[in-house]
Image (cartoon, rainbow, N blue to C red; front, side):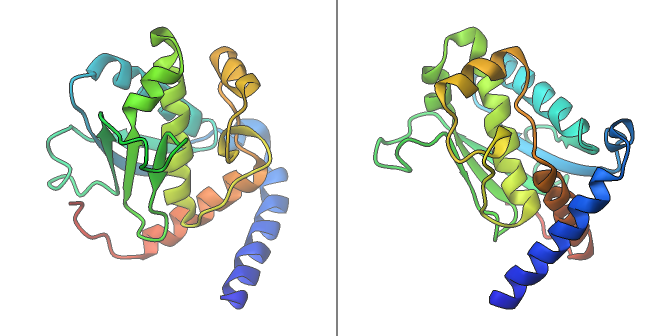
Length: 195
């Protein structure tokens, strides 16, 4: 375990130096694609807006998100499957909006009911987009880690919630490097059908 941590940190350190040498416009060029299937219930339009914003946030760091049609997660071999919870018990992951299984590498559960009740309805898609980006990043990086700032903070403050309404929270350089390293590692592993 210790050796793996050292290797990951070495790769991240090398990757940070590499990513800083790239011109910002080049960083936005799409170089990786990920297929995601979100199993929707009744809240289509707000969730579609959340998907669009999440896609834009990832495009800024060179990752293209392809949202699969809702009913064909298995058929499309979606790399990541997101399930929405509409009636989350207060005892299940209290105080959180979602959870990902980064070591399993496929599944995310988003507590949509909590997201909707945290902010006024017009802002729900914005918060949802940040929740999606945060959890998808856990899956893509393949580890459970958080950053001091930005979209990968462990917990967003009220100030963060206000700022995300003006401009999406950003990834740190380390986040970006670990996402691209994780996508590269995923491309080498055989893909199993999403269930």
